[in-house]
Length: 610
Image (cartoon, rainbow, N blue to C red; front, side, top):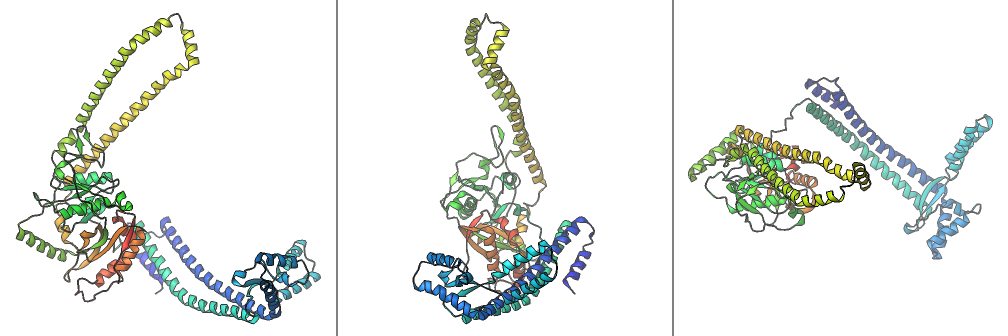
């Protein structure tokens, strides 16, 4: 079955309207791509054929005019033997070109004496025969004036002959052999291209057909089989520490607020740094009343600073950490702008750390395998007498939200009282000066005052403040609207968090994510993660990343190539080696779908030698 019939069959299975404009447009684009691939192949073969004909002709002309070629070689060699400057040689050739029947008329300038080569023009006998035939026909027939002009142009063009590059250090027959060798090389290349062109064209036809089907499925809302539904935490920057703690960071300021209200509690920790661009990393603490290990806090600090200017500056700064109950979204005036927080305690700064990150994969297993990991986790928790609880409980969040307007109105009333007092003081100070000016200009009437004010431009100065008042009112309303809008957004986030149950079932979600699978696990996908290097030590798939200048797209392609070319164990016995199903999933991944986890744009990839 041909590729075209297969594509038509798959399109018919989609049950879409093939006469719609979008379907016709996609088909037209696919046909254009296929035609370009076909013409590219044909052009490449035709260029090789033309190259063979041209090299054969040049070799034959060098043989035909061997005496002339040797005379040209000897002519140039005489100048070279006399050690004349190359520019002076060219000047001498220009002067000899004025003489009739001079050997210099066959030589083209400039010379390429650096490579011992010279370009000469050799007349083609076949073209001379065609010229004589055309002259005989023109003498017998009455041609138009335009045809005569065109024939003269052809005569002038063919008089110069075929340009041929010769080596002055070898004989004319050696120069002819050089062109015949080039012809043979082009013939061999043509046979290779023709063999590979058919395979390349079939592959291109198959790829274009697959892209067409994908585009049609995307237009009609079909989900690809290899597309998986993403977890809730993948919309943020995230990673799991080496001790198993979840760390979240917002991609923008609104996401930072979303994490605070939906997933942050008083028992959790906030880690960030003073360097510009640093992330605010929220560390979830599922063990209530217990402190988090220092290594987890240090890893969160490295993750926070990876997005800052410290990464490009290649410095080792220090991060800070605060407990969740010391972090608030409100101050005395009300809710703070997006991404900003109020801290009620002193920041605890961490020791400087080297910014070394890594990219890796978590293996996603099926439900049966996840249940086995869940049973192992519960047994381990019962053995140690601990229970993991993920919540977002914070003190007085709802109370403060409902009273934001009251606090803002009180602050506005206080500001109004201050402005009234200031205006009263200004008016009392300026009363005496106004009385003096009134006595000075008491004899002037209204016409005199208006003329003087027009000359001095006083009316414009009086009108300007009147025009400024409406703009000030607009700005005040705009600021109030932004604060009210942010307040509404926060209330909506809190209402959604009450219905969101994803945080409570997060332990069950983690049971399906395995860093190094066992032979009993059935792997159905791979979850990309970008994390501090120390947090990925247990991962089967990991690559070390440091500050550098390489782009993330190129680095991701190198990572995938490294993962897909490592040693593989078909028996699934060795857990350190790659397995066949993992290799198939890796080959189906695209770099553009994976680079979103990076918090950096430039990097240096460090891969172990094979």
